[in-house]
Image 1 (cartoon, rainbow, N blue to C red):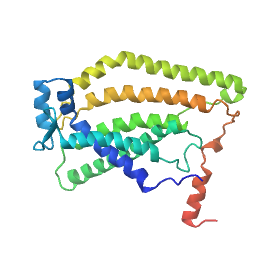
Image 2: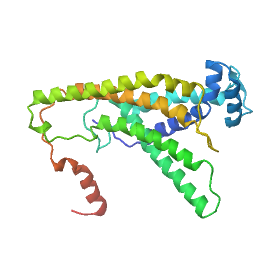
Image 3: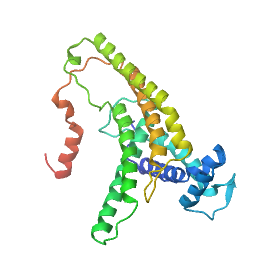
Image 4: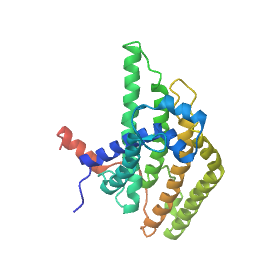
Length: 276
């Protein structure tokens, strides 16, 4: 029997993962200083960023107990999140255990959209009703939107919902369709390889010095987004290879406009409004 999707634990795991990952990301200078070497500039930056400066240090000179617990929480909630994620009714029907990582990242992305919207609504409220705009909402929205944009691409690849043009593809026999699939996957993998090969040095340098945005809020957007681009693009390439293997023995499918209609969703809407 297929396990039910949408349970509470499926939402608590991504939410807990986001909280722990956010804490670790904001306090990443502590980990860089203790594990990567001392830097006076980074040390001063960490003193300004540290939101819990009086907690006891448990590792090195900077990592406190909450930092360590948050790092452990990232790993624990990621593992349990991948293990507990379930396919929703409107999602792609066939996926293996290896697909669960992409689906879990998709769940995290969905909650990031909620968080992003909440930040924007809060800024509108305090700015236009209380006349007391924040210094952090704009940069935080930009930061979150960057993660959403990247992670949504991985989820779209796993769901086969990226833009594809089937006009010629549908006319081919299955053998030539497989050839086209191999070529497209090879192009994706090649792009990912050269992007990582060419961008690794810059991304590592920005991460190592924890480069920030240079605003009043000063979030580490360059230090996080540059490595995240390489990480997500690598996962997209791996997902493309997995899709190729999973779909290899599929029968030829003719795509029509009806493919965009979700019959299950229509039936649920009819039941909601009481229509026959």
